[in-house]
Length: 466
Ligand SMILES: *Cc1c(COP(=O)(O)O)cnc(C)c1O
Image (cartoon, rainbow, N blue to C red; front, top):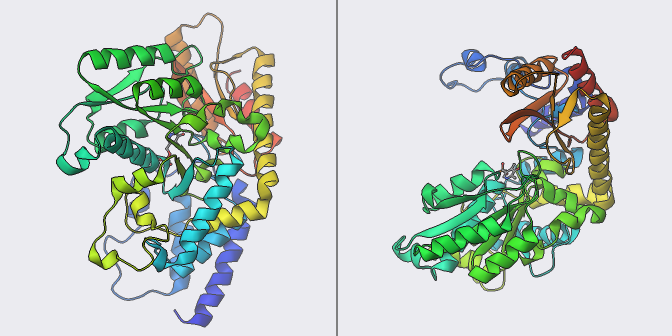
């Protein structure tokens, strides 16, 4: 593609994106295609000759777009959000254009140094002390895996890196935490049986005394407590583990304390919402995802550690071809995580934070909390619904309750209700199960969501339960 042609198509695509942002509500939030439908429309082998760009773009519109679920639709209330913003998208275009692979400082000093700066900004924004150093990972799953690997090496004096496992190390987390913890435990070689699930209280937060009992029991049996993963904002119900108390237990037993605040961490940018972070400053590591709620398009996960040298020692490699004269004066992020190669993700964070300002981000968060609360109040005042977990931040877990219907019956009715409202194409919610009860989750976090969109959910609920 020659420069002139690139320019023309580039302008067309920017127009396409602007139109998409303006018109995203015209699409059904959740794609309605059947399994295999998109595949069947695509050739089963690659074209031999290059094709005209117009043809590729036409197929994008006709084949790909129908198979897209619209995460940027203001009716997106499913899972957690993965919101983006114009500033983030524009920065991502520059990142792709520069095509930087920032494995070491020399391969683009600005990529490394901008990352140092924006991670310091982010740390300050969420109120973590300067005893933490940040690094960007692709996802929270990866950050948690890094934490588990660091914990493993710290506990064993780097022996597992050298010899493999010779002792049984234990990891503890609440029964409500994210599946990425189990995945990380398996990948890091602990073995799934050495992940101990700790009971939670009525608000679905980890019970500290149960954690301490489990650790004591393990020690009695010759097992070694290695790591505790606490959750701030569980995916199921936004439960907050009592991280202050957990941190003290970890200190007592010399276990690593990692905090997974993938979604909720962004809320700490608002000082008056920061209570849930109390004690987080005592953790060994902490992760949250700007790619969920902070206007930064996927992927971009912020990982903070107390001891960056320990992180680097866990991953460090130094083959001859990566040695440079700057090695000892700069950060070489290849040793701060799993992959060697690194995308220049700091650029979009920089664009987003500067374009919105910290205050702009706070305004969005507060608006989402307000919308979740308005919705929860409608449910409460209506009487036909039950809220099944404390409304923390911007998540409401609820179900329809009719009179004289069995628990099994309610589970069926609510499953059916979720399917019906999602079929409308205007909203997309997902579900969870809390204490055996099937419930719907309204997770507010899309940049453009307004009161009319949650009103729409409420009306759909009323219509479909009449
Ligand atoms: C979303 C989420 C994750 C996983 O995030 P990824 O960045 O997709 O790996 C982990 N933990 C919690 C609590 C989450 O909400």
